[in-house]
Amino acid sequence: MKSISIFGSTGSIGCNTLEVVRSLNRHGYPVAVKYLSGNSRTEIMIQQIREFKPDAAVVFSPEGYTELKGISFPNKCEILFGEDGLKEIISRRDTDLAVNALVGFSGLVPTIECIKNGVDVALANKESLVVAGEFITQLLKQSKSKLIPVDSEHSAILQCIQGESLKEVSGIILTASGGPFRDTDAEQLQYVTKEEALKHPNWKMGNKITIDSATLMNKGLEVIEAKWLFTLDTDEIKVLIHPQSIIHSLVEFSDGSYKAQLGVPDMKIPIQYAITFPERIRSEYERPDFVSLRNLTFEVPDFGKFPCLKMAYEAAEAGASYPVVLNASNEVAVELFLDGKIKFTDIAELIRNTLDHHESCNLTDLDSVKEIDKWARNFVYDYASVLH
Image (cartoon, rainbow, N blue to C red; front, top):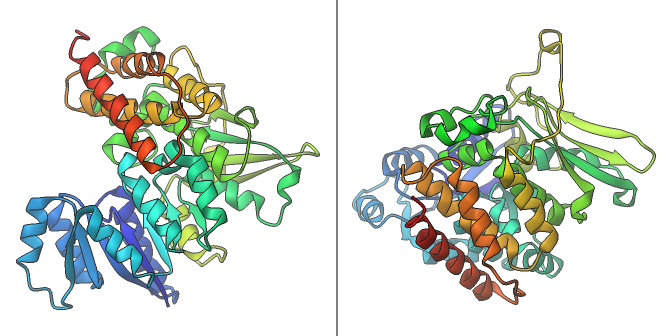
């Protein structure tokens, strides 16, 4: 029996993870859900607690915490609150794997706490490595904890390098669908609506990551994540637009050979691989129909049309505090766009101006990361207020 915790259980990745748990249990691979955490989607969490019967659930919304505390669950589920509650369940060290599906910077502390406590992490929170890759890498060297990527692209890379010598890896190619605006003229992007930006052609995801996919910032964050996951230089990581989203990434080897991982665009597949790693367990998920596909196409991303990807490469190359600023400014800009306060093209402008006004500094500990993150967020809010 494998026991898991799910941080962000009411979001897209969290709900998909629980679908995977149901499927694995049906196929004779027993998985118990030990702990859950969520924010404001209280009704979903109540249903999850009743079905999966965790020992404890952590709620970040004060209103949700009050509501859940007032419910007498049949399994006597303990209800805890906020970051302290999350630290508490991690410190118990009684789960085999923590699935970190939290969105944005909020996922950093749980990743660090898991590593410090020797808990393996199935990482869907790419921001952890974006803002603190060097810090986390050093922690992993001192811990028995393993970091297993959940993003489909990084899961693909992990699968392709199994049984291979990392010394023979020359580089990797991360594929991207191109998002909903792949064929939209650059001058028309300033007029796109939130509803249009949230219509991803291939994947069903949360709002923040869907907007990141529309700007290609999501792929930029994945470049930085891959740098730390697979110990690569920035120039060894390429991005190709692959509209069909069947090839999830490729690895180039020193002899000129390539290996790729293929599958339908369904996050349950990499989630299951992360839970059962290094085993493969039979699943009921859809397989590609290669005859009907007919074509798998690729193209180079347009940095002029999608400047967020270019800025991510620049931040990755500059290192130090720049990835923190990139991530924080992007999170605020996306939030402002979703709230209808800025245009789609303003997202990149806000990020560029924040990066341009930042003076690089070394990150010595978690507090220094938080300080830079706070500075960048405040700068974006201030700049956005005078943008129009």
